[in-house]
Image 1 (cartoon, one colour):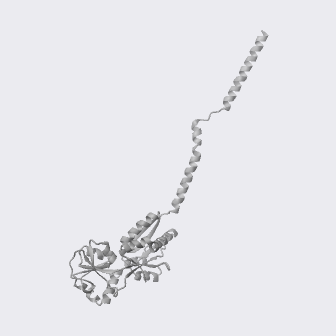
Image 2 (image 1 turned 180 degrees about the horizontal axis):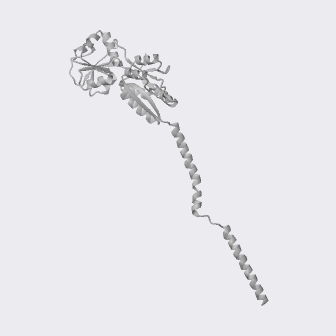
Image 3 (image 1 turned 180 degrees about the vertical axis):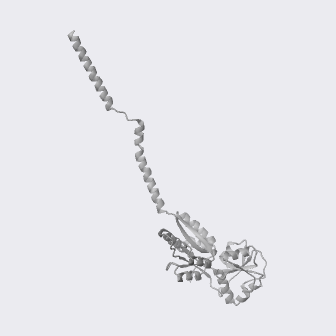
Length: 300
């Protein structure tokens, strides 16, 4: 009996030790839930996303939105719209904002404090006046284009006028105002021809800019009108040229472009304005657009 009891105690002890070892083994092999394992993975992915966002932010900052205000003579508008489209597509973030009117009107607006970065005039007179007034960045103005003064009539319209010499035989004349370059050129031409007084006695429809004169003739409101050759070329189905001004009586119209001192402009805006002005004056594709429209490159 004593031997049987002893054997039973030994077997119970062995069983107890085995259970303890098994429990320790299970405790050491702790299972990590799949959800916790998956949650650890996005750490590297999250870092990549943050890096990408940082790069995109940097690029966005480099291409900050900048507005460049450009005052242009009305006769430049059609060509300048094409130039704007080309430039903006190649320079994301830069927006070219035009103000198109007579150069005299634009000059007054600049003198009165209108925000302007670049002035593109249809005559040196307005640019020189702004230079004298201290509105133009020193040394930034460039004579870029030339244009011709022409006499037009409505397409297919009847008139006895054959040139500037007998312009007074017309029933009415569309003529730009005295502060508009094309109006000034026309008056200089009439003065040099000795017919200014007779012309000014005519029935005159005075236009605020060259576009207004062109439109008046195109609509048949006036028998004849004086515009630039490029304006006539922009409406070949509406107007036709009767004659070009005699080169011996008047010099070609000269178009200077320059940077205006814009007190409201940021450094980024000033830089963008200088770059656009340089593009206008040095890019061959720009000059081609001008010459295709009928302008000529300026020559002294």
